[in-house]
Image (cartoon, rainbow, N blue to C red):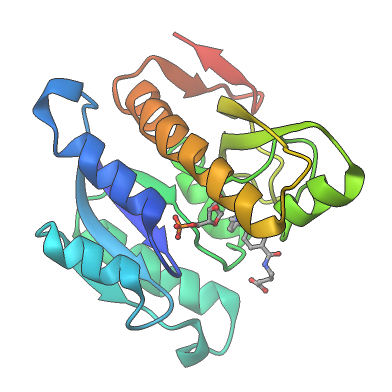
Length: 202
Ligand SMILES: Nc1nc2ccc(CNc3ccc(C(=O)NCCCC(=O)O)cc3)cc2c(=O)[nH]1
Ligand SMILES: N[C@@H]1O[C@H](COP(=O)(O)O)[C@@H](O)[C@H]1O
């Protein structure tokens, strides 16, 4: 399957997807053919270039509204023959039109055990809630943010000394395991999004 990864920054999740898809022994069944960032000069773009993957910068500030920005991304995705999109630290909300068009082929990784702690600063929400376990979730993307069907979750303990940074780092380690696992399930047809928007195990 031809995959695009959408980023806005560091790209450590992108790196884990590059490592997994470029390792023939892992049989992920996916090839990353395009990386799109809405922010120029981020580290994730360098990671893609180093891996020989095409990159595009599409700045949301260049568009009058969300739909036009999404359509500009969609044009590049179609040109590259993309079949699956992975959001990896992509920080723009996508329009319902874009999500509908890509439903079932558009996944995201969230740094908490959804449905807990939706939205931004999920790690901070977990610390403030005083939970003793958190983790990450790879889910299908729906118009309603962080509400899509769940493919994979990984848990991590919260230590009493944890700060937002130490917890974020531990959760990222879990993300780097969960995301390649989820992409493999989707790319090899082990999982689908049912018409009822629920997960369907084939
Ligand atoms: N429609 C849809 N689109 C998404 C886009 C990105 C992410 C990644 N996780 C994200 C979750 C939340 C945000 C957020 O609230 N950012 C501040 C507002 C930025 C803006 O105005 O755009 C961004 C990404 C998830 C979703 C999703 O679940 N559904
Ligand atoms: N959506 C969240 O944004 C962060 C992106 O990190 P990176 O992949 O750019 O390192 C990750 O923690 C992910 O859960």
